[in-house]
Image (tube, rainbow, N blue to C red; front, side, top):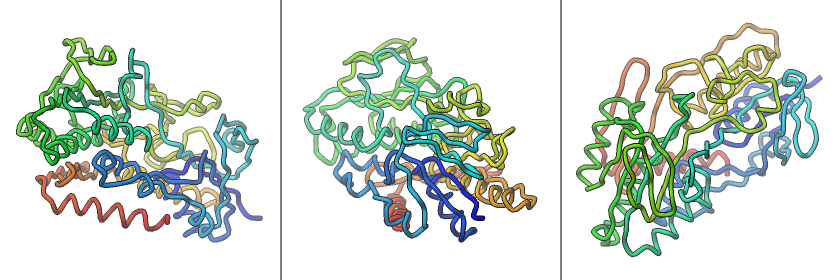
Length: 376
């Protein structure tokens, strides 16, 4: 009898898991549960405000991909989990499985007072379009860009895109010949923002801000926002446009399960992606709190590595074979500034930063095209 494998989500980790499952198990019955049969390439949202990318470039319908992978897509919102993971509850009914991969992403913590006055860029296409339109209508003023974290989960933050929005906005305004009419302020509660990228990367980022005339407000805990103001324990400053990426926590449906949770609200897992205490239940990507170094990133590359390890162990468990595949901990990204890019690479053994250049910007664009081709 064919084994039923369920994947929750249709983001980076989920789709990588689907590919790995089908490649290694031709006859498995695979179901994917997500609200929409589409994939949004979030890393390229940074290019929407400048017009370098349009929404249709980054939203990929998955019907053809699911057909090729012989996957059944269930359009639904997950509402909970029971029977130690064997039953997934959704607003469209319950789905039973023999093995489960949770790759439903994370949720931004929106508890700061007045956070509705800030735009959270990685919430999707709509947020990026809002930034584009606001920039186009502004004739001058102060643009404040920053990010926060989850105090109970050091890894549950996404700062890289905010550096890209910061430098990309600066480049765009210069290209338009109106940078002198704007003040750019970068704010962060940490005195050394981006420290998880490595010490050399932090120096490079701060030096780039200084060279571009970007002011900084660092090392002060966030207190909240007003429609025209950023408020911290170290003072407040005026802002006509605020872009802010909060820290992340787990999906709300986790509360309707007995899944083990980290202090930050994510699903606990080892380096093998197994959820402790749950048979044949695995987690990959932003949903999980994994064993590893504090600087382990929440990014697409890491999600892909975790998904492959999860699949290897899942199939071994279903076949009764021993397996302890572990994902490689690796931070790899190109911090783009619209016309140039800076490469950052960090592993447990080394840290590398390549200065910004045009070649790396084009490398990021080439990777986007290559990555999306598999889903079109």
